[in-house]
Image (tube, rainbow, N blue to C red; front, side, top):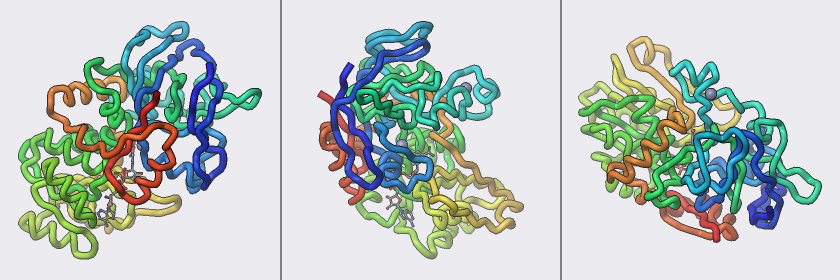
Length: 368
Ligand SMILES: NC(=O)c1ccc[n+]([C@@H]2O[C@H](COP(=O)([O-])OP(=O)(O)OC[C@H]3O[C@@H](n4cnc5c(N)ncnc54)[C@H](O)[C@@H]3O)[C@@H](O)[C@H]2O)c1
Ligand SMILES: [Zn+2]
Ligand SMILES: [Zn+2]
């Protein structure tokens, strides 16, 4: 079939929306009609050419939501008409990692996915004879995509896909950092550094878990307003001296849980130092620049602080994402508040501009 898709032709240049070919699903694969897709930093990062593992041409997009159109041989968990979210972080339920119960980092399709291929080593995207590689195993800046069954989460039909799509990356990353990695307990004191979608997701996760105090740190007053709306009890502008301020606010001890959602290594260090002596846990969600390192004075660790990282908030996509979608339907996760703009696919480059100017939290692309 022919589909409209936003193709990264050349790094540092605008994406080019055009018609390309998409082959049907092979064994174990599913054809999904994309209904909505959030525009995430990782898309812009890859488009810029700064990501050393990036390649072109490719179809970007990974925060996708859609409807199953057709399934290949052997697909048992999905059928046409099912609503799904795309998972750049798959869950096969069988590999050593999935079976361990200790991590959400599934090994089943990892190498082929990183190479831009579907699990059988080929691509379904093409332009005439030229094969086009997939991006993050998802390529959802397109009217349709073909993905492995293990990389799709089935979600309730009654929830709007243009809201749920935020769960396919940013929102789940933040919410999961709080509820799956930190496992915040009722009554906890939490600090969240950075109030983009990931940080605000962490605020929503801490609120859901019953945290008593949620201190949010961000230099943007507009984002702090949004954080208060989502349950932040205190807000700070950040920068030098912020760790001392947090210690003052917590009786000199630091917070039970701290979350870093900026990607800045100096903020990661503040998040470690703002965690409570004895048991404070710092969860790093931000992605630092290539070659950057995080400085931690070892005394912070010997005195009981712990540091953890998480990809996709530690969420096991096929198990946890449907649960989060249900929490949204139950009115317990305010995903609507994360969405600032809707734009048609044709205006994907405007969505990058909005992100560049920090205008809004999330732009969602829609498809006609
Ligand atoms: N781990 C994962 O799987 C995963 C998934 C998605 C995104 N991420 C990463 O998470 C990070 C956040 O993503 P986002 O979409 O929320 O980004 P964003 O740019 O929308 O938000 C970052 C926020 O940090 C704030 N900030 C800047 N300097 C600060 C400082 N000194 N102190 C406190 N806050 C400061 C900015 O004002 C901004 O509001 C990025 O590094 C992104 O790459 C990770
Ligand atoms: Zn993302
Ligand atoms: Zn697995």
